[in-house]
Amino acid sequence: MRTLPISGIAFFLLFAIRALLPLALCAQGDEPERDASREEMQRRIAMHLEARWTEAGIPPAERCSDEEFCRRSSLDLCGVIPRVAEVREFLADNSANKRSQWLERLLASPAHATHLASTWRNVMLPGGTDLEQLQNAVGVQNWLRAQFVDNVRYDRMVSELLVATSGAEAGPALFYTSLELQPEKLAAATARIFLGLQMECAQCHNHPFDHWKQEDFWGYAAFFARTRQVRGNRMMARLRLEDLDSGDVKIPNTETIVTPKFPNGLVAPDDSGTRRERLSIWMASRDNPYLARAVVNRVWAQLFGRGIVDPVDDLGVHNPPSHPQLLEELTHYFVNCGFDLRALYRLLTGSRAYQLSSVCSSQREPPPELFSRMQLKPLSAEQFYDSLARLFPPSDSGMAGIPQATGLFNPRRLSFLGRMQNPSKNSLDYQAGILQALTLLNGAELHSASHPDQSSLLGALNSPLFTRQDRIEVIYLATLARRPSDEERRISYEYLEGGAAGDAQTAFADLVWAILNSAEFAMNH
Image (tube, rainbow, N blue to C red; front, side, top):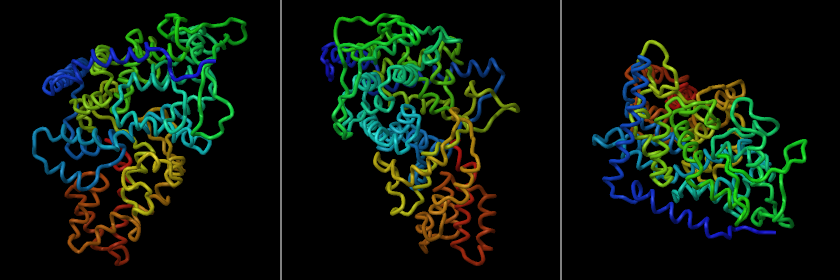
């Protein structure tokens, strides 16, 4: 019986060497050199996309407004709408590099790490955060957030998760127990999440569309066949995993034992380390053609609504990318930057493509895979709740604005997420039903955010220093991160002049409620 942590020196030498070489170009060089490399890659992104626009005869959208950019980037990078003071400061800034400075502010925010942790946790634990999964979710969330706070290299983060031994408060071992330590479940999940491969389609028979055979899937599953939970420990803080010296997998309904084989077709050497150690070393090696490509595509999809390969977990030969050369160059950039996720987000959010308006410039709707405009993305349930929570009274939010890891799992938030979860895997689909509609129309969250005696926003507007026009403007800034149009000002002012049965506070509450139920608030555009 062999108990992790990893014993081989190779694992650590791998990261020591890899940490020195690629970073010389991107992360360890002088600031001007890093900026020049990023700007050149952003020019390459524009060049590849423009070539397709020209070929299709579709004009790209105009550059988005500052208000659009402020709200969009805050939702994408921090998972929540910006505060009124932040919007005012950004709009008042006249410097040429205001957008890049705003992005740096978001990327350095603790909320960015929290949002990335939530995003990756939802991918790793797609079953949600019900009571049965709650301990797993909290542990994985806390561990992921610590990685993103320190901006740990992505390849190292994945490799450390693969050789996890202890749940404790770090949590990666909980990923294993959430999948019941079953080799086939672990193989399917890790291939889908980290490699962008749907190998599980070959679990019972050869893949009908891709090149995967049964032997390929079970060869990959064999890396997890010897992992077990140490018995006798009931407390989550003492959860431990161990790797046995024996244990194999067989192809279903046969007696054929399958030895460990990497997805690139190479048979794993049997010279040193546990099977999971050998997989983790390959996962972070240059022999792995999938890891960097898959995460680049996943991050692109998070920001643009769909991947260069769509869906993001199906990067098979049967599903070619819309812009193959662009994906290859972005992958090369990411590797040369030392698998730096923060550098990848900085690159993409600073690109021309990300800063296009969501308003279509042509008479016909362009195909979404051309990325000629920013797609409308419905707010996730998490983004919706956390944005509403900025209007809650402090005693109700349990989050003090942006939630930390513990606040993410308060019962009120979990209840809202359960009601508002989008069943579609497509982030561009808006599939609200009766339950979602009732939650928005009559739910306790909208009530708290818009009630004249409960909303922190409406409470702040009681100050005699505000004129009626000031109050209208603050409501729009707090909810939509923009000032109202002249028409919106006129309509709002006329409604407030009439009042709600002569009650000005109720009239303001009605205005907030209407905006929170609008399509504009519910969408990231």
